Image 1 (spheres, rainbow, N blue to C red):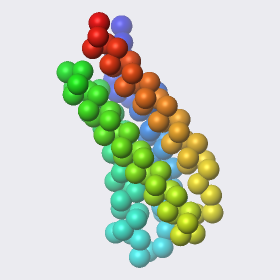
Image 2 (image 1 turned 135 degrees about the horizontal axis):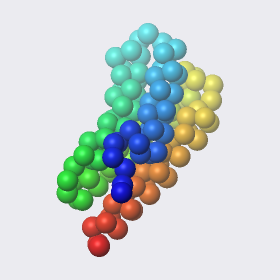
Image 3 (image 1 turned 90 degrees about the vertical axis):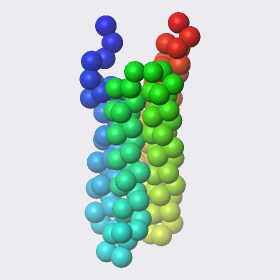
Image 4 (image 1 turned 135 degrees about the vertical axis):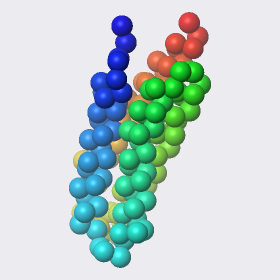
Length: 121
């Protein structure tokens, strides 16, 4: 028997932890970034576990993969925002966030691969 709830997926759990990290660091950004970088980073970050959850519930394999791919794209977007944040000196380091992002990326890649294999069987 497979996973019953999206919350049981390790990739969702790790993506959720990543969003909490994003919210934590953006709390200290300059107030003029509230509707700029902070908003974009948080929205893109939340998109990752949200699309994993939505894809999990989709019935068709292609539909599932499409949502997981959206999650991957949002992850890449946040990775760029982390680079920008460091270059703007809003954060002194982005290493722990990048480590978490890479972990989420590997898990997402595995989820997509296993979902594709189900299509072929």
